Image (cartoon, rainbow, N blue to C red; front, top):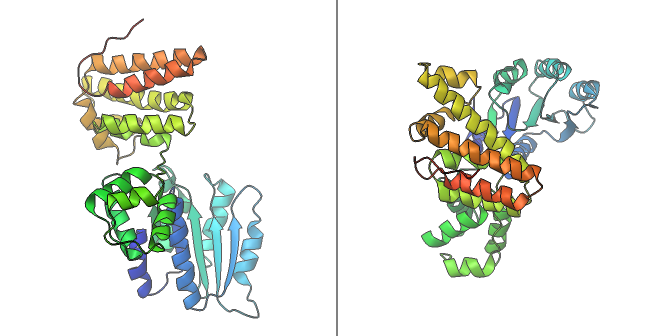
Length: 340
């Protein structure tokens, strides 16, 4: 069963499952989901907690010893295990062995990073899915972020006018930890309700945050202004142009391979599967191929090559200019003129 963080309160009213796996790349939502599960467990008599990190030096025997021992003070206990980016064969085998030991007086709370489709097909992930609810956590996308903020404000007894809410979404996109702290601060200031744009701008310091993987999807969606904003913010945050070149090269090369496959009569989903493109991203890739001609895609790749040459010449400013031009190049389907 898959649960989302906002579904946990209703789920926990019906009781605790023996095992939960919270995974994803959003630290605030992961921390809050774990806290909610810990509180629910304490209310049911799970007074003892053992935490382990499954790194290379993990002593799995210590986990099994903890899971099988009873203290003098508590007959019910929590084993909390934080999984690494990759789980080796030993870790996979021991984890599945641990899951087989679940019983009513033992609660397993497992936390892990964001997982790709290949990782979600592994034996250990399937064993976790059989053992209890899966709780994926990820930051709300730009469309749903204002609603998330509205709910967060309501939780603290606050309301915001529509323009104030949209400013808050713009000011903190990608940084839930920061905006959660600001909302808590606002709740202590006894401000007039609903909060106005002027009130927020006087009392809140903007702090948005993006990661490099968020750059390409707006380009696929035709949201070029948003992509340019993300690009400029990434530069301010110290992301290296070379890293973006690498990521964009992979995505543009995938588009080119898909385009060639379609030209040779290959079904899109077959070509996408061969390139290991996530099913959730395939509609975006398919849609952009309807807008980009082969000549335009070649021009975009030429721009990326120019950025690479600038990096090789240690000219970072020139590389960033080419990256910005590449983003703007997604605006229409006309071929671009690339200077030699």
